[in-house]
Amino acid sequence: MTALTSPNCIGVLGGLGPYAGLDLVHKIFDCTNASIDQEHLPVLLYSFPNDIPPRVEFLLGKTDINPGYAMGELMVRLAEAGASVIGMPCNTAHSAPMLDVALDILYKSGFKGQFVHMITETANYIKTVYPTVKNVGVLCTQGAYRSKVFDMHFNTYGLNVLYLDDDGRSHLQNDISNPNYGIKAFSSPVTDIVTHDVELQAKHLTEQKADLILMGCTEIPLALSGTDFQGIPLLDPTKVLAESLIRAFDPAKLKHDYLKE
Image (cartoon, rainbow, N blue to C red; front, side):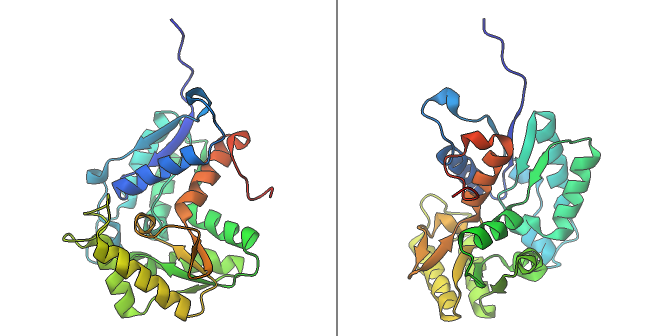
């Protein structure tokens, strides 16, 4: 009998929402240079959505329960299971009031690995691949808008963040979370009403003269696909995170590395 190798893997904190975690794992496989099963990287998806309180509601002040505590405990479990590199496919959850708590718990547990920050990786990607981009139009949740998590990280890279107006943000939040037609309720496939409205909101960002549109909620790529929208770049942070996780774990396995191209 062949002995199993010691645990060492990429860890994905899923459940934020569940399909976003699955989408990240899918993209890790897509971005890995592998021709047979055994050449793929070990990946552990930890998806316990029932353990993580709502992120948007916390950031909007509708609850005092900080999801960062649950996120941190789940990341500790990932580390204990062998994850040496950890990523989290949820832009909203990278907001400082939650992420600071989660990472404090993770690193105080003795974790010696690396947490890969999706938003800073995305900002670096934009500056490297699209050096002329200045104005980034962001499709995101109301919670991410309230916390200004994109402004906090993008501004340090010289990027200006454009948002939808109040009505547009309300529509987009419904596209994500409405129980009757939203992406969280209907992910595969997404409803026609959501597909139409997400495209409409993206169009509103082009009207604001955005140089690039960022799908700043990890559910949005389930409704809007491609690499451009009406002639301007359309960027998926989940794909950026997938590439960054591979680079951090084993750079030789990355199919295409924008840092070297």
